[in-house]
Length: 184
Image 1: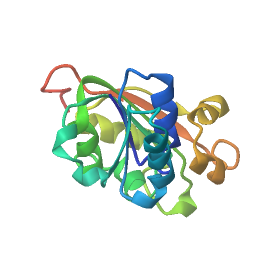
Image 2: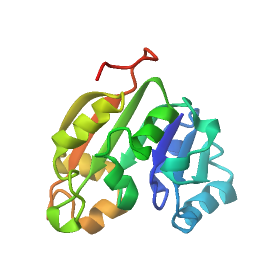
Image 3: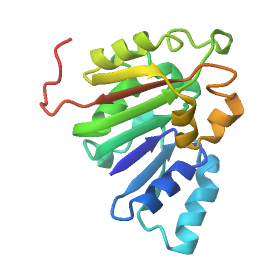
């Protein structure tokens, strides 16, 4: 199962459901209105029974998602979801870890500049350290390429001019297969 946190318009979930019809794709966002069109599209046509949308903040994800996702994505978050990427043991990273099954892949892309007023997140090493301290194993963190940004098909990234007008970053991590996780 793939869970896309902060899914926004939900188009990423529809693409994932189409690309892998035998796999459940769940989009989670606190704003129901933002996902409404995608949820309606998946339901109305009945062609994407493997696409599901959940209205929830990452800080209070449903218990049904606990350790259920083998893939978690966060693509160009904003607001509390973006701020939470740099808070070790905070509710955002705890939520990501909680829904990740042992061995799950976590893929995060974000773009922020100092004028956005989100301290810490504009330094990818700070975000990587927060992930490590939260019990997730960071495999890679780097400046995202234009190709990676375009492959995300994020409407928010397009609005931000991520990778063109401002830097974008990508972090790939995993939840350890062992329940104890890495030593901090």
